[in-house]
Structure formats: structure tokens, C-alpha cells
Length: 226
Image (cartoon, rainbow, N blue to C red; front, top):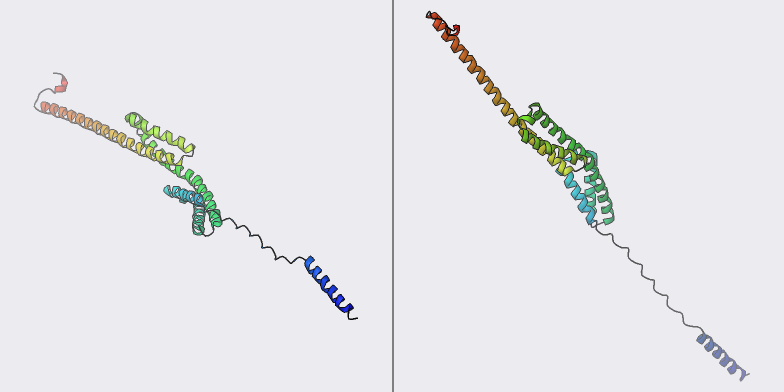
């Protein structure tokens, strides 16, 4: 029995050693792969510049009064975009894009009404010149004014707000100037005619007075032919 026990213990130790050698050591857990960072939204510089430019154009011609609803919405969205700029560029871009659409609507609707108003003013000035026959009395100046007016009509039809508005105002002022010249010519002609009539009447009165004096003196009147 004394010999069996040591061999049994030795065999158990050998088996334990073989078992430990065949079992690989546990590997540490692999580190998690880093998640890609969410790309930052670029600042909407182009949208901001466009919205501001459109607002300046609408304000230049006072188009807000012709489309107050869209103008109010556009200014609010522009402010919201400016407030969010650099903090939440996604929201800023969304607000600015809405502002661009709304300002374009203001310019389209309000621009047409604004040009219609300017055309009415030019039409009234042209009619005043026509009533005075200015196309004859002030022929060259009238033709120049009418050329500007016709050009403005074509620019209006083409949707050219800037040039059409400028030319309608130029035509209006030109027709007003033509009307003033024609009116002055008419006034001068009427004064000259009145002066001629007065001179004629004075001459006739002088002749009548002379005839009466001759008659009173017993002479034959000068108008009798004697």
C-alpha cells in the first residue's frame, strides 16, 4: 500500500499538469471599435446671404405693403435662422430656406402690384401731356418721354423689377416736364391772343372816338369815305 499511494499521487499531478498545458489562457475582451462621429452640419452661409439680399430688395421697393402676410413670415424665419446660426445649423438652414421662398413670393406678388402702381402714375402724366397736344407742341421731348415709357412696358412684361420701376418713374417725370412746357406755350399763346384782341378793340375804340369827334365838329366821319 505504501508503494501504490505515491504512484497514484504522481499520476494525478501529471494529469493535472497536462490538463493545464492544453487549456489556453483566457484572452481579454477586444476593445470596442470607435463609433464614427456624426458629421457636423455646415453653416448655411449661402442661404443666409440669399435671404438677406432678398429682404433688402423687398425693402428697397417697399414691397412688404403689397404682401404683408408673406413678408411677416419671411422676416420671422430669417430671424430664426440667424438666431440658430452656429448653434444648430440644420435648423438654421431650414428656417433660412423658408425665408428665401417667402421673400421670393413677396417680390413676385408685390413687385407686380408695385409696377402697376408706377404705370398708373406714368399713364396719368402721359394723358395730361396728350390733353395739351404735347406730341405736337413739344414734339421732340414728347417722343423721348414716350420711348422711355414704351421701354418700361416691355421691362414690366419681362418681370424686370429694377429697370421697369426706374423707367416708369423717368417716363412719369419726363411727361410732367413735357406737360409743363406745353402748358406754358398754351398760356403764352392765349395771352398773346388776348393782347391782340385788346389791341384790336382799343384801335376800334380809337377810330370810333375819332369819328365822333369829327361828327361833333361838323366834319364828315372818316369812315364815310368823303
